[in-house]
Image (cartoon, rainbow, N blue to C red):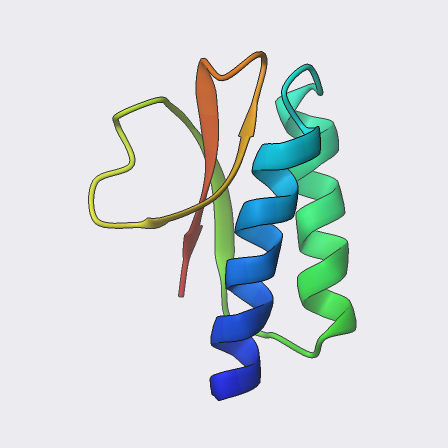
Length: 73
């Protein structure tokens, strides 16, 4: 569980750092591939407007910061 939390944290920082202009679908696919490679199962990634994530964990931003990728377990 500790490794999972670290992985999501790192993905969050990495996604925010280099995904400013990426399309949301491209970023979502990259994050899903990284989570699958770590063996994470039973999750969903959704694209939402910035500020509309609710209680979900934001793991990346896309489309110049107007949208976010949220992680739900």
